[in-house]
Amino acid sequence: MLMIWCPYCQELLPELEFAYAGEAHITRPEDPSALSDEEWRDFLFIRRNPRGLHYERWRHVHGCGRFFNAVRDTVTDKIIATYPAGEAPPALADLERAS
Amino acid sequence: MKRFSALSLLQGAVSAHKYWPEHWPDAEPKAEYDVVIVGGGGHGLGAAYYLAKEHGIRNVAVVEKGWLGGGNTGRNTTIIRSNYLYDESARLYDHAVDLWTGLSQELNYNVMFSERGVLMLAHSVHDVQSAQRHIHANRLNGVDNQWLTPQEAKDFCPPLDISPGARYPVLGGALQKRAGTARHDAVAWGYARAAAALGVDIIQNCPVTAIRRGPDGAVSGVETAKGFIKAKKIGVSAAGYTSVVMESAGVRLPLESYPLQALVSEPVKPVFPCVVMSNSVHAYISQSDKGELVIGSGTDQYTSYSQRGGLPLIEHTLAAICEMFPMFRRMRMLRKWGGVVDVTPDRSCILGKTPVQGLYLNCGWGTGGFKATPGAAHVLAHTIARDEPHPINAPFTLERFRDGRLVDEAAAAAVAH
Image 1 (cartoon, rainbow over the protein chains, first blue to last red):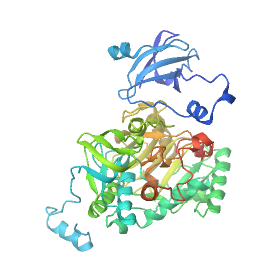
Image 2: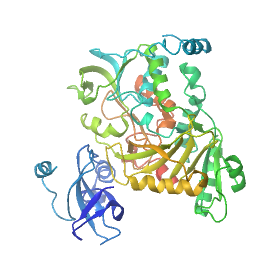
Image 3: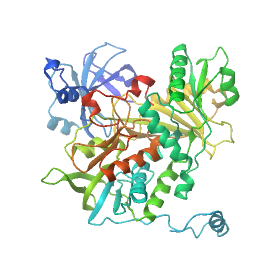
Image 4: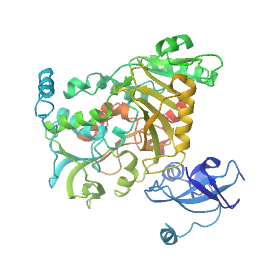
């Protein structure tokens, strides 16, 4: 079971309290009707799906109910950092040191 | 290569199993092939076999990062069925079931295909309506599927608890009689042996690290742990690792890789005559010919390349199994494992050409790729050999995500499947 640090509640809690919500830092386009079919496809469907560090969204559904972001290694499943939604992602170099 | 027969099996048995011939030779890569298949699962090995057998292309290599049967081919719960809702899917999976039926004879290798029937349970009014819609759609497509009342379901599968007070009440079920199971790793071995007999090189323990493209943009070959292999055409059939392999060719995909878990119990005498699936509680169960209960769970909620998955999920699955089949409450589980499955947004596969000349893709089978093995392999070989899709896989393009022509089995089933 993953243990996840909620950056709002400031507590380390089991995965069961959280819901995964997909890749993070995908910004909804300001004007979808101005996009080409390719750009709209990229926004809706194309994902990095990396084997390694993954920026992803989680929601503390059985706690504060808020969305936050996490960086997780998809090979070891170790969560390296969590941070509130809206914050810039931590730099990869810092994360590699932490992992 | 020596053909297996009743006599050769008897010879093997009376010689105390000392003189079994090698099933296929372990190949080292040549400098160049007409076709390189990335991924030595059932789909990749099968594609190589059909390329050699039906299209006369024998200068083919299958490059596998681990060992045959070590990936998802050997990690699934071996369920074979074709009762999918949409016309496109029904054609594809029923093509596979047609090929499963004669596969042991075709390959001269016993894949132990057993048409023991797959019963999909309905626990709510919504389930009943959804199952009956599937049954009607299947019948229109010539796919067998029939409705069973709770008592008929109990008669077909005696361990099932159909009492009105059950935690998951059984309101009926959809039975596909032609569906069943097969011996999963025998499928990989059978295809490997038959392909090698036709001249295909099977290269194990050789990860492909990159796909290389020439100055004209077409593929030129693959970088592997055993050096560069030149190839005119490349078929990628790498399941959960497809995103990683394809990124090196500059193709980004609508895929996410999730762990899918399964587990087996201690072996017991025959107690469970069929396959039972319950989509709404996410538990699948059958009994292998060795006697183990084979239990399938769902995918974890997060993407991962770890072949493990989390305990909460199988705890939930086993709780459901114990409620539906009370006689299994005292069974002990022996092993659990995970496979990395590549899931598309519409839960249908991607099988066809890519924007890169000479690069062909077979991926996105999600949690249900095993059942499609012969069918997928057969039409992938056609697509590679003719450089155009077979009518059966023509709807499963990569472009459908741009054009909005999804084959939305995700919405049809409302669960991963």
